[in-house]
Length: 182
Image (cartoon, rainbow, N blue to C red; front, top):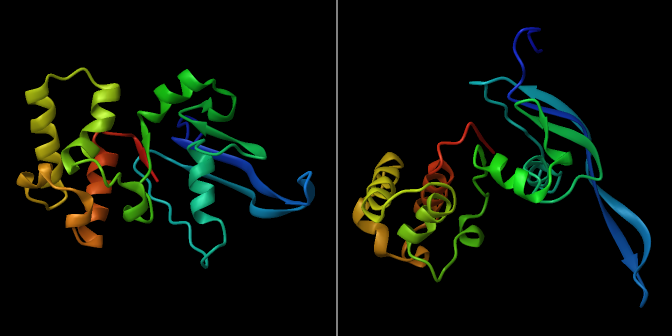
């Protein structure tokens, strides 16, 4: 799948995520749920990959493990040749600027106490050194790019439909111009 001269943007090798099942007062482990069990694939720059499966089969868990939002039980994830599973918190934070996730349920991924402008500008504040005016312009451009009115920046997530909330999540994911989006 990979050309010898072309490194994969993302390489997932034998990725496993098991969640322990515990019982009793001492939380003794009695088994595990095998959410992700040994997946491997590569994605080249510009490529799209669809992960298909029935509800509850581990697709979202795989995405979270790939981005290291939850730790893998086993396996490796390489992004631009770097093993994400071996990075410390600060190095991983820097790498995540280039990788973003659009969450499945926008209702749960958007803070109801924050305005849309604040939600979209949060990663910009964290990772880019922009003045307030530049940041506001970028947020407005991102809203336009997902088909929303830039005047919506002072509204709250509950004021939007599910589809509009999903577009807000997409705008937030695009805010840092990532190389890879889940």
